[in-house]
Image (cartoon, rainbow, N blue to C red):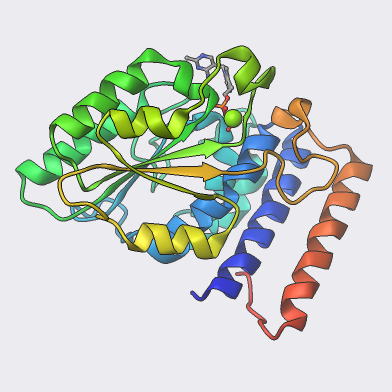
Length: 284
Ligand SMILES: Cc1ncc(C[n+]2csc(CCOP(=O)(O)OP(=O)(O)O)c2C)c(N)n1
Ligand SMILES: [Mg+2]
C-alpha cells in the first residue's frame, strides 16, 4: 500500500473502532486512536504475516504490550481477514473472544497482555529464539509511555541490548498521557530518548501519527547491526477527533450518540480531503 492508501485505511480503522466502542459501551478510546497509525503501518505495509496461516513459524511477531488499546488491533485484524468482521459487533460482550485486552484464542494474537510491563520481556524472548533458531522474523512490541514506569520494562531493555537483538523493535506510543493525566506529572520520564539510548538501543524519534515517517523508520530496520531499535512515536492521544485529542478522560471514554456522529463526520471530511487528492481505495 502507498502512503495515501495507508492514511485512508487509518481513517477507516478509526471509524470502525469508534463504532465498535460506541456499540459495546466500553473501551479504551484515546490510546487506540493514538496508536492507529503505528498499527496501520505495521499491518498493511511492514510485517510479514499471513491471515490464512497465522501460525507460520516465519511470521513477524507483534506484541501489544499496552494491551488496553486493543480496539484498533481488533479492527485491523478483522479487516486483514484474521476473523470475520461481523465479530467486531461482539466486542466485550459476554462469551466473546474479542475481550477488552488481547486474547491469544484469536488468530493473529501472539499472547495475552494487559497487565502493563510484560510485553517487552516476552518480545526479547521471542527475538532471542529467532536468533538461536536461525530464523529471520522480527518482533515488534508496542508499549505505552505511562507503561515506562514499570521496572520490568527496563530489565527487558537491558536484556535486548545484551543479546544484540537487532530483530527486536520496541515502539513507545508517546502520547504524554496515561490513565489519570500527564505522564510527566505522574512519573516523569524525560529525557526518555536518552534513557533508551543509554540502555544500548538505537533510538528513532518521529511523529507517530505520520504514516510516511513510520514506514520509512520501519523499513530501515535493522538500522544499526547488533542493536535493538526503539521507535519513539510522538503521538496525540485521541488523534483524529478534535474534541478527544489530548483530553485525559477520553482514555476510556465511550462516545455518546452525538459525539459519535460528530466524530464520524470529522473523519469523513478528512477522508474526502484525501480522496479529492486522487486516492480512492475501498475498505473491505
Ligand atoms: C500493571 C498494570 N497496572 C495498572 C494498569 C491499569 N492501566 C490501564 S491503562 C493505564 C495507563 C497506561 O498509560 P499509557 O501506557 O501511557 O497508555 P496510553 O496512554 O497509550 O493509553 C493503566 C495504569 C494495568 N493495565 N497494568
Ligand atoms: Mg500514554
